[in-house]
Amino acid sequence: MVVAFPRSSVLLCALLVAPIATAGGQSAQVASAQWDTASWDTAGWETASWDTAAWDTAGWDTASWDTAAWDTAAWDTAAWDSMSFQGLPAPWGLAAIGAPAAWAKGTPTHDRLVCIVDTGIDVTHPALRANLWTGPRGEHGWNAIDGSTDVRDEVGHGTLLAGIIAASRDSPWPGVGSPLVAVAKAIGPDGLGRTADVSAGIRWCSHIGSNVILLALSEDAPTKDFREAVRSAQEHGALVVAAAGNTGPCKDCVSAPASFPRVLAVGAAGPDGQATTFTSTGKGLDLLAPGERITSTVPGGYRAASGTSEAAAFAAGAAAFVWGSCTSWDADHVANVLTRGGSRGHQPPLLTLDLGKHVECEGE
Image (tube, rainbow, N blue to C red):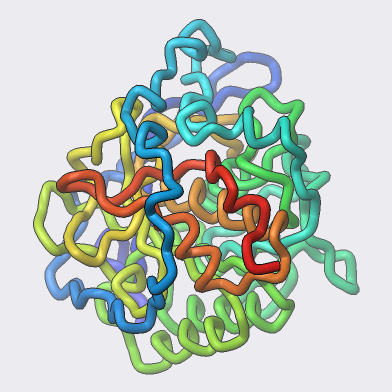
């Protein structure tokens, strides 16, 4: 069923906060009213918590974790404060998760495939071209709305997520890693989405062998078929990463599909290492990642945005990075490694690539 945005059955978890910066340094105005999360009708959002029994935490050696790494001082972005490009925020999120130090140890390239079920992708963007998945017909994704290979992104949300995950290292705002990125377009130019199209997109991502599937959207009335699409993708080995939702401040309000079993639910944190006021929270939230004023690629240039969509993209990129270094791991093991730092008081762990011995692929 299609319902007009923002009361659509599928909602995007981001709020654009700055104008597009084009190659020439000019700004183009883009209507942002449809991204106003304050107007979302969240009635009926399922907040069922994860079935944690499915996660085997036995054998986690928490003693081996240096808790100093989870000190919010590690999110100090002072070194990045002087950096900006065309007036948009510097990539503080990369510093926060320790990406530069992790890159220095070696970056797996094109070793994992991340599939984004979203609004499409700008396949011509110079920061993305090198890391695009390419199919047998030269396509870079699939359009679940009309069955074509036209994945043009009229909204910009999917392109923004792709940049956070895998923008080239020489771009103004690099991505977390260098995996291949594919897209299943399931959200149209009006920000409208049908649950059936999202389900079909998930199945397509699974069909092409995606290691990580990103769902930076919320479903207000998940169907049996939608749940089955997620479960099937997991059974085929994919790690499903989902945005927790932007309904905060609230309690136990993590939205579907982030609330589904074995889906990595990601909320947004700011530069201070604290959960943002807008992020959905509760016992179903497993990880916090940078999600406030994040600059990334959009069609025609770059843009800054805030939301759990951006945070989930950081987590998806980190999962691909870690998994690319330890290819014998499975999806659950990758998720466990990313979250094994445990809670920080009232908060879940902060995303980090400073994983110590764990990047040495224990168990191999």
